[in-house]
Every structure is written in C-alpha cells, then in structure tokens.
Image (cartoon, rainbow over all chains, first blue to last red; front, side, top):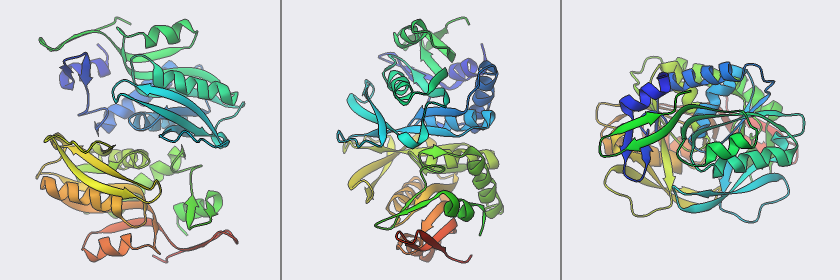
Length: 193
Length: 193
C-alpha cells in the first residue's frame, strides 16, 4: 500500500451506501503534511508533462491543487459552483450533477484564466461517476487549452468515471483506487497499481 | 508597502461599488508563491501564540489556510456552507449573511474537529462587514476552543468588521487594509501599519 492507501485504512471510515468518509484528513479537517506528499507524488507522476496551470473545483479540491501547483511552480485556478443559470459571456461553464448533494451546479471559470496556450493538470479529491471531472475537461477543451493529465486522490474503481476517462485517452492517475468496501466489516480493498 | 499591498496595486482592479477584484492572484486564479509568502507572514505575526489548528471557510479561504497551517505544522479545518436548515447534532453551526452573493448561509464545522483543547488561528481572504468572521468566532467559542488570533489577507478598513473585532479584544492581523478606493482613477489607499 502507498502512503495514501495506508492513511485511508488507518483513518477512513466505511459507511453504508458505499460512502468512504475521509473528513478527518482530506475534505473537512486537512492534514497539510499529507497534502504536501500528494503534491510531490503528482509531480513525480506527471514529471514528463509540460504543465503551466493546475485546475480544480471548489471546495475540497482546492487544498490539494494548492500543493500540486506549488510543486510545479505554476498557478492554479478553481472552478466555482454557481446556482445562477444566467452566466455571462466572460466565463466558460459546464453543468455538473452532484450525486452526494443531489443537485445540479453550473461550474464556471473566468475566460481570463484559460486559453489555448495553457497546458492543464486537472486535480480533484474524489472520482466516482466522473460528472465533476467531465465538467472540468469540457471547460478546458472549450477554452482551447490542453488537458495534460488528471490527478485524483481517491477513485471509486467500482463506479464508471475512471474507465470512461481512461477510455477517452486521458492520463488519469489516482493515488488510491478503491475496488470494494464493506461497511459491516469496515474493510477496504484497493486495486493493485 | 508590503508584498501584498504591492501586488494589489499591480494586479488588483477597483470596480464601482467599492469592489476590489483580486481574482487573478487570490480568489479564482491563485498565485501559490504569494500564498506561501502570506503563510510565512502570518507565522511571523502569531509566532508567540500556541496554535494547534487553523480554521477557515470555503472556498477562497482554503488555499491561504493551507499554507498558513503548513507553516505552523498543524492541520486546518474549513467550515462548510450549507443551505440546509436541518443541521444535525454533530456539527457546530452559525448563520452568515453574504452581501456579495446576497444570501444567507448556514456555516458548519463537525464537532469532531473542534474542542476545548484547541487553540485556533482563524484565516480568511477578505474582511469587510465581518459577518463570515463572526460566524467562525461563534463556532470556535461554542466548541469551547480558544481564538488565539485572526489573520486576514485584505481588510476593507472603511467597513465596520475590523473595528468590531478589534474592539472585542481579538488579535486581528490584516496584511493589507484598504482605507479608500477610487474606481474612476483606479487608486487604492492603504492604512499605514
């Protein structure tokens, strides 16, 4: 097991409905030493890519993206969730369904911060069905920028998002891929990488 | 002028209605070198305080809090905005009015992550009327933890938040305090500190 898988086993909690709670170190209370290590690991995995910008989505992707961007020495941009359907012409936008929160968000990025010269590494904390990620990909492609890669902390390998994204040809690197969880036994099985 | 004031003058934009746009380096596209410098400056200003946790609020406070927490070698927690009025017993909550977004949010922190042993540094990007900050202070005090200090990147000194918080006895450190702005001339006047 790598450092993140070890931490998930130690401090994560499996809840009914295939919910993996990692709120004590990754998406409510944040362990900055772990975040810094995640940043270094993504730098290693995308070392051969020419990346000049990191893109994530609010809120829990922000802290991870910050440490990844620090490693690459580039700025990061976070897409904002907007309830408004009246999006003006100054933003790229995508519609994203959230199964966790049972709602639909419009996600926006100012046109000032993405253009055809950008080589983008997309970062997020979780990948399940991939709705949020596909929204970010569509925003990058609308801008004319290039998706150089996608870095995810925890992928739910038993949901379809990862396979769809990999089949589409993107370099998707997930630090921990959960194949199965059992909330009664509290066990988590990771994909061998 | 300090490093943040210089950056505001260089890259900020004054808009009608006393709006200061810093979205190219502080709250949409993020300059991680600047964030790291902000982290170091807050470490210097609160060096004499025993701080074991940093608290902020989603979304734009998160990246600043991450670098501050890294400097102190402690975890950070971000308060989540919730539209739900049905808050369960496992969270501390406060009601926060947003003048920017013209709405009221309930802000929540899990009771797992704040208790009477905690010595908290509150961090946010902006302070204007102080509603969000007072919500965070009330959450810390409800938990029995101690507010050791408050670090703000940009304070609008012509609004009442800063004075209310300082009068209440908190050590509030704002890296840049804007006294006046003129959107026609594009000028910004900072408080001498």
